[in-house]
Length: 436
Image 1 (cartoon, rainbow, N blue to C red):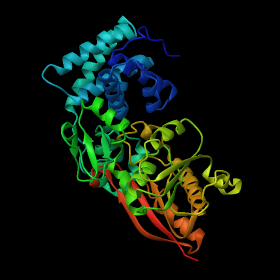
Image 2 (image 1 turned 120 degrees about the vertical axis):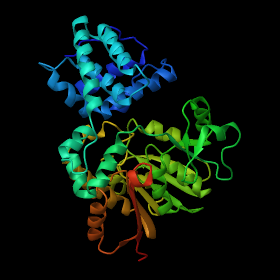
Image 3 (image 1 turned 60 degrees about the vertical axis):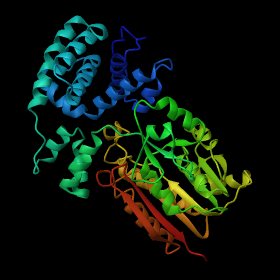
Image 4 (image 1 turned 90 degrees about the horizontal axis):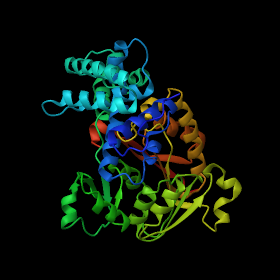
């Protein structure tokens, strides 16, 4: 059992990052859930610093752990391990002259409070050796074995092997390197008639993707105000492909079949101007955020249905809500492995197992078959994922086309590759239902 923190009520970002990392190491809690547990009274700067340290330690876990594990006669307590990981990340991150000495000193002082004086002496010795080892490290060569790539870029070995088989050596290395960098924050400007003006234009950096902007650090008070008033929505540019393939039109009735947290429903309503978007998702913790996001809809009318898409037809769910049972277009953005968004979801690589891809593909196939039942004759169905994996993308579509025996055909598709496109990875397929 983990020893309780002596400074449990701390507002120090470094100590809080250790505390959350201990919970992650011991209980395998999701990183996003851990961050939500931070005190609401915590200042924005401290919250941001805590997230930065936690994400960095989780991202670089294997690279740091492989250095300090041989240095220890026995595994350290989880608190000490968390200290070593966060200090190790600070060393990887680098800094001005004297950075190593400052990292060592700070880690030692924190250990005295969070653990014990004897363990602080251990941390002093080990962090110094981590610094020396990191300084001597070189990026793996072009012909490096998958295990060397996995250790340096801090990914599971099985995952690196899988990507090498799918993407090849050069692309895999680019993907691994991409995943190890902090993600920029992007937002969609919802006013189609004009872009940011005045002071707002200085807070948001234009991107190559129309309507999307990178949010500058230090601009959060104004950004939050823009979100609250419905002018801005935090969203990665990769999300645009599914919407563009679906091409929502004014006056249409569209079903968002796995709607939470609601970003794509909102984007469709914005694009349509008139018509109706019906958003359905399972009851649960994400529904409140979905409701909040849908409340900011403009243009098209938005309706929310809480229920199971795969049971909706049998239970007459839409009929119960006096909603259509056939739609001009259906968007199905399925739950997936998240392999395209690992910059944001830093713990995904440590949670995923190789068997999960087949499990996801089965569920995705079932959801796709269910969503297809609500497409009107001649209507459109877009299947999308934030996965890079062929088993969840091409594999699911291939099986669906075989099962539907010509009732649907693929009209267009798009695959986003992070190291090529410069934003999250995603896949989207536009399927057309036959008119008869």
